[in-house]
Length: 400
Image 1 (cartoon, rainbow, N blue to C red):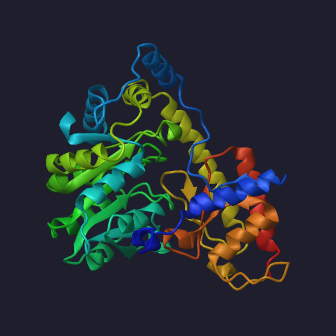
Image 2: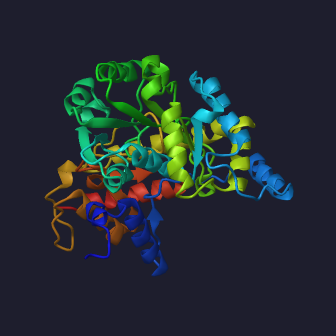
């Protein structure tokens, strides 16, 4: 009898964590590594949020919390959904978990049976198919194309749906591509879903506030109220509020689903950190004055990186509407030879070559289910981004 669970055989390690660790190892050896592999804002958590956490500690808010979250935070979340998304939820339709990943895992664990399918849109966040596998389901894929700016087309969604499909996961703006759906684009997808009443929608809105120019964020149940009763709307405070380490994700959905997720979470972790929850109340209810500052900096960085990568031999880099990632196409470099004589056969070979030769860490696109591409996070300083892009340009120019 094997000691380890068979489910682990279906799960791959996180490529983003693997690349980040290799970058740390090189840095520990004294190399001047610029890491563009981490999906984490470089800004500090705003002071009003930190002060709210300190105040909570001083009030003695340090005990166990209800499994689904403190009432004050769940109420703040309902106000956020109404104010920003036009969605009406009651507090008992809300769950607070230890990060967005925990929300998604709870939902899948509470709903998937063997043979159930979950559609992941390629390129997808690396954890989606692995969580599906851990929860006993089968990940299926709807592929996007660079000519459509990595946005799922309605005909591709229609083609991906089968009688076994239980969920489709929609992530806008997207990690890894930064692609975001306009109201009209989202409506075309929700029209497809309205024709398939057995399919539920898990919407990952983690990058909601990080959209640029005149782009207007929308979420599926907002665009198509007919999907309200089969949509889990997930969000969190990690990206927009620079609170990655506080570990607060949240979601709202139909009561029977939330009850099931509460049951699962009650036997996993119970309630998440009390201090983090009080900080999140302030994040959602307090001043939002930091958001324009974050957005202006990220938009400037996006434009810098897109411009420099499009001036790089062999790369084509679309300009995304949101998040803090770009996803350049590197197909013209496959088959080229590095100065050390090694042939670049995959996008993983390319990013490892850039890391080992120029000390810039990125993540290969095949890890996200679509290549040959690679993901760059521009959530770091302008100076580091400019230097990193110069190094990438130099590496690509030396390929033969």
